[in-house]
Amino acid sequence: MNTLADAEGRVAVACGVTPVGYLVEIPGFGGRTRVLESGSGPAVLLLHDLGTAASVWLPLMARLDGHRVLAVDLPGFGQADPTDYRTVSYLRGFAVGFVHGVVSALGLDAVALAGNGVGGLWALWTAADRAECVRAIALLGAPAGTAGTPVLTRRKLTGWPLIGRRNGVSRDMWTRLGHTADRLPDGWAELAEAVAAQPEYETAFRTLSRATSGSGGFGATDLGRLAQPICLLLGERDPLARLETLGTIADVISGPAIYAGAAGHLPWLDNEQGAADVLGAFLAETDSAPALGRADRAAKAWPVPAPRSASTAPVADPGASAPR
Image (cartoon, rainbow, N blue to C red; front, side):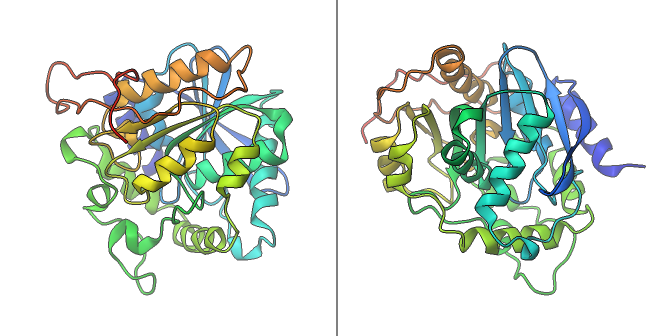
């Protein structure tokens, strides 16, 4: 029995989405990986952070209409082949090769990239080094190693030291990431445990975290040089973000910076419809003719969502201004 597939299936049902999963080969950059796909239209490729897998995007995939949504397992996570990042001599080149390889394997010319944490950093690196395959970038949650943001570590995620602990995740890991328990989909804790139980998960987590910390990241000057439009959705409870991070990134990107009140590191977990509305609106503006000029860069307020058990939940209003 594939425990991960079973756990993903239960969460998918709870979220109301039925993605198609399949494996693709990316020779030289992690070997085989898995893609979860839903919807149709212009393609958007979702890149997750450390400690999670493609299935972490299921709540967002359920509500992102009008696009072909492709969530991919980064090497070493989910159903991708095991990867020890100590064998990677140049992480940026490896990351760009992997993302470009996925785009090519799927038969696409160019995609929008949406990333969380390390996934956000990989999206930025790819936009800089293989600009021809990236139409737009959405940073959902603090991107790792970007304009001074830290990298997620095992201790930050679970409260555990890196040495002597294996398999399984701390029950309060989502609280540590700034999330509220009653907003998480049914079966979420079991899914997180199944992801962490995959072969060589701990090795991939530990070695990618260290490699990312030593990679040089992506600075504010680098951000300012990108031609692609960039959207930032940052939660006020994101433990990897600071208010000055929002200001620094907002000052140089050519797209909206939205401050998601009452949201954690994965803002779609606290208001999935709001996050889908923000991302969908941004993608709609960049699907056909990306506007490379600077857009409204002021931080916006995100209404606090009602508990998941409530019959309705307010949707994000990107036009509601808030003081910076």
